[in-house]
Length: 369
Image (cartoon, rainbow, N blue to C red; front, side, top):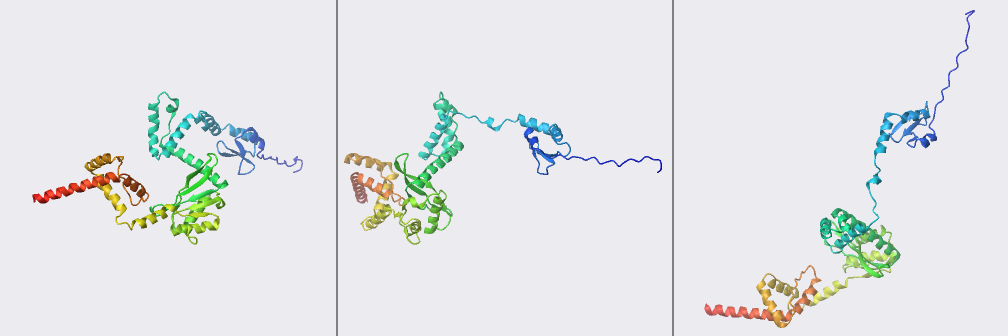
């Protein structure tokens, strides 16, 4: 319109958007870059993403003053560090005592459950001992110590087998369930002790048929997972079954493919036993039946044992018990025969007196009838 004043159009105000800056993290360590975008920050304390688009540093300060962040910060400051719950004792005398006690249980094949009673016992036995007062290794802790000692021993054995010659031996256990155990026994030279040791390396289970190939795979896997080479193996010992000694399909055959220098040795005790068994079969009396009969004749009768003691004293024979022979434990045969020969003069006199006593009783019975 004429005579009216006109104004130029207003320019739009330019709004600057703030992005996250690393200096925020330097000043507030809990504030980091957000995964949403560059216009957001992330608080590691209260697990929150917030915008810094408009105020930048002012937005961070605003978040720090919020009730949520303040409460989380107070809770963290009041929390005790986890390291404060544990005290480090430089005195290892109690630990040494607990390890020695566990080592004693294992060495003498005593149940780990006994560990529950060792602590109270030593405290009563040594009430003035500081070590006994702090002793606290029950079955749970003792089991953990056994595991730690086993790992340490296994690492020592493994290292020796990696760097020096060794010998292997195994034999299948009695079938139990759907698996069979094959204890892997190792003989090696311990440089620290300066002598040859025979130890149990592992006790793997065979869940497949006990063929020569499967037994070899079981042994090979145990060596492979420990990075032990067959090149250091000097000999392999097992029983005389073809599944072990067979050079084609037996375990020995597969071992020779790995290292042809391995000397495969059968069990001489089995061979001697088989030879002795064949020879004993030609005797007019069964030795095993004789041992069993003599044992059970004396076993449950204190009167007969007292009678035998008189003849042991008379013959000047050491008073020893007659040992029981168990056919499934064929190594007991040697001990039983040795004891029988030792006691033979007294036994011979005793059974002759028993025979004459029974004969006189029979004559008396016949005359009375």
